[in-house]
Amino acid sequence: MKFPYIFLFLILLLLITFSNQSLLAQGSNGGYSLVYSIPRAYPDSGWIDSKALYMKEDLDNLFFYVEFYGSMPATSSDWRRQVSILIDSDGDPATGQRYKEIGVDYLVQAFVTGDNSISQAFLLKWDERAGDFQNIKDLKSTSILRPDTNYFEIKISKRDINYDPRGIKFYVVTTGEWGHWGAPWLDEFSYTMNSSFKHIKIDGRVDDWDGITPVKTVSQPPDNPQEFLSSRVYVANDEENVYMRVDTLERPKTTIDHGGVFRYLYFFIDLDDSDNTGDRGYRGAELYVEAEFHSNPTKLNNASYYIYSGESSKWYEKWRLLLRSNDSLDFNDVFELKIPLTHLKTEPQQRIGIFIPWGFNQILRRNVPEENALSYPPTISTESSTTQIQSTLTTESKMTSLTTEMVSAPVCQVSNLEIKPSSVRIGEEATISVSVKNIGNTPLPCSVELRINGNIAGVHKQVVDPGQSRGIYFSFIPEKEGIYNVNVNGLTGSLEVVKEAEKPGAQPINFAIILMIIAVILILSILCFLLLYRRRLPPPPPP
Image 1 (cartoon, helix red, strand yellow):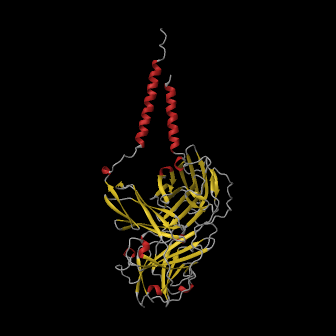
Image 2 (cartoon, one colour):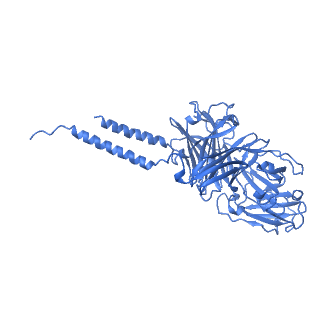
Image 3 (tube, helix red, strand yellow):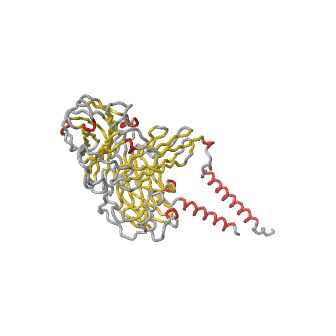
């Protein structure tokens, strides 16, 4: 009579196996403990603002549940929500990358786009020799990252982070991002000098723009938050400056109580309105202006002016920094910027081209908490929802005034190009990643551009603190077979794309077949048990 015990043992084994495969809450924070309650910073749009952090564990795993105030506007890949978890696994601030009072040994990065076209999660480990984080595991299969939900749920193996029973210290950084990657901003438009002659005061107000008509009108979907959706562009000039004005569908917030809102506008100016001179990758531009408009508990503005110095595979070699200024731009009702004519060197009635290849990104960044790392298992009480959390990512507090003085350009170094996997089938996803390090003395928005076979396939801009490194990831899905040339800021590699029959390696697991096999084995076991059991029954008594 061993078969009943074997049968029960098989059922118990299967239940344990499948239960360990997914202990995620699937949208419910049941079983979780509240680790931190986050005060609301942006009431107009819930999807970008984090609300609370929960955690739980089992014998082998840690579970993170990051709750937001709402789901994403699932309309476009322009919207993106990201969560980063900075883990100090050994409690030693001298190991790993230093962040505030902890040493970050492991980094979790997870993000999803509004249309769910990209959904990724990675576990990275600090490599002391390389001075950077290295991707060690894909966490997508053990995470729930969907735009139509108000949470991220991530499972991490304790073994993968060398978890000590004494616990971990960590910070969580959440960001909501928006970028004008779409067609409305990829058109160049022109302006004729003195066609709109006007003296403009840079104060972010519209009073002195009377009589000026927009040179560009952008049609945007009614997504939320609308203060990041540009609607019109105006240009004017006087005898000293060219003035740019960008309107949004909703008045921008100049300050917020918690976190930080980081807005960027990029203007490439083609002085001779010819694509055959200057930087041909940016419609022949000879002047580039990077405008930063930040809302924290205080308002911060900064403009950087670059001049084209010649073709080079490295961005910082072909674009030379002229100067920085914090009094040449402002925002209140609208966004305003001025460009001194001393940098344009234009003539009356000269026609210039203006190219805006992308727009605002990193809408809201929350550092959770602002100070004093969280612990798990909790060793300190959680703070109430009135706790102030401010962004620690700020631009330099002392900006230089607008002068023609030449300054040396800070450098964002791009290195460690990785293409994983190096060979894919048609329609499969490849991940292209690089490391960006700021070797300057001030926080910098580092720009990373991905080109596939010479064509721009993606642009990512990330603010990096001095001496720090960040990983930048691109997703690419090829539609044709062949060898694709990959170029990221001058770093080159290749991606092989083959037909399905030519792709080496193991075939994907068909879980439906596996379940059918298990079911057949169970049925056969039951039949065998019933047959053997009937044979052992005593014969009936004679009549």
